[in-house]
Image 1: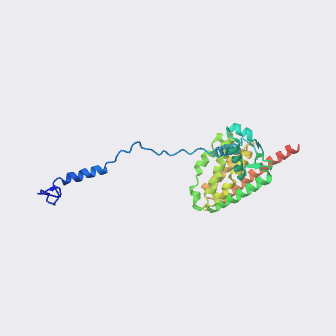
Image 2: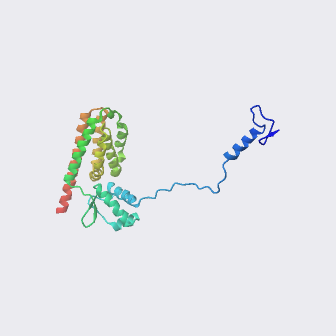
Image 3: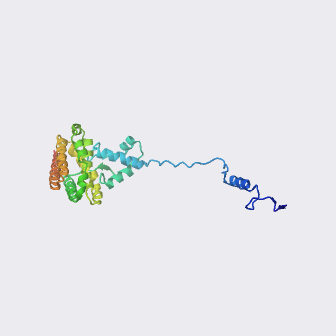
Length: 262
């Protein structure tokens, strides 16, 4: 007998004999993906370079490497031709650098590299001494992790004394590492504001004959104190180092004044 379209012969469970095949066919039919024509692949778009950022990076590097000197004017037409950029992104970059105290903008919209006088240099060094002293005093056990040998290897390289640009970068990194040793993690943000001005100072001082050799010895004395975990000795060596820099910058300012008045 046929009932409801199935034969009377059925499986022990009451299903028709062809039921397993029917189930398999149904599963295959509805689970097999159907071709949908041409597939569209979403490729993430590359971020287009921001021209003002390019100009900012290039001009900042020129300043912090000493390629353009303190007080030197930045002429928009010349820098535009050199960087192969229009005036607009260059002006935006200079405005940003002015916010970082690296560029001075006059009321007549001329641009010049920041020029630090004797008072500026003294103020910056005073703040450096204050912040780096605090870093040593709050470093605690972090001094044990200070990369003494790495910096010792760097400062003992004879060729470093012949490359003031490379020396300045290592000098800045060394002092930033001292600040980073502090347990006060807000200290780094305070010091970061000074970093650009510190580099401008270092460029000027490093070009004085014999200064790099002397600075390397001063750094090694600080490293010796750090290795001995002697904070008082480290602070004494730091004060000598920064006071020496102050004297050199004062001498530079005196020479500038003499040339100007002569």
